[in-house]
Length: 272
Image 1 (cartoon, one colour):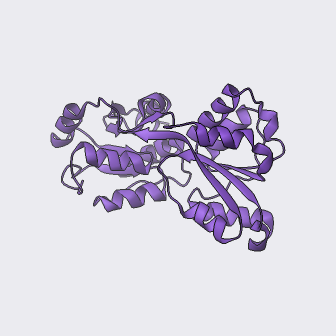
Image 2 (cartoon, one colour):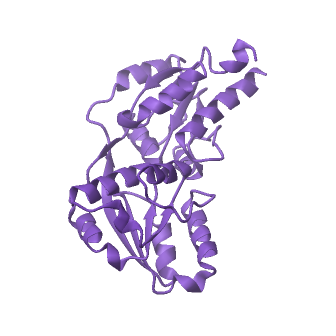
């Protein structure tokens, strides 16, 4: 393999909008392909406004049949609160566990939590279909109790679909995604306006929304003219389209490592 093939992002600048606390591994993956990475975090992961609902759910785990965890963030915050309340992960043994995304499943396995279902598709629609397949039909949702700890702002399709099928769903706030108090907007804008960025990456719908808010616009096309847009999954790509963007890069797997690999593959193909 030539040096160019090993480093398909050599000479390329990639702007990442991920939360600073989670950006290091993603940045390292991009840099391993030769990219120059510019950090412009548009979200920050913070505790929920109140732990009342989450604590109540944890204290009553015996009342649930299923635990649905939609992200590695949800796993981290749910398990941290479980520990804070003096509870052990073994208390989850009596529940079925659905992990959305391989990274979520890996985080659970590392914490010694069993995983029963990992949907092939990370979209809420795909998650419902995977659960229906596991249960053996829509009628088997009737009377089941689901616990869904997640971000304060998230899509409502999955809980609505589960309830429509006869299940009861408790959606509890486990963490919040907020705009950071400080972001180096001036540096990012200078690079974008000056043509110094080859690709911008979005790892959630919140990163898209907050990026647009950062630049006070509903149309990101002028700002990102000539810049390739990479989105972690289909839902994020749909959000980007609401701001006038077309996603050039969407990996088959919705995780940061796959996104870095897809960005490298895209530019390698361009060079080829």
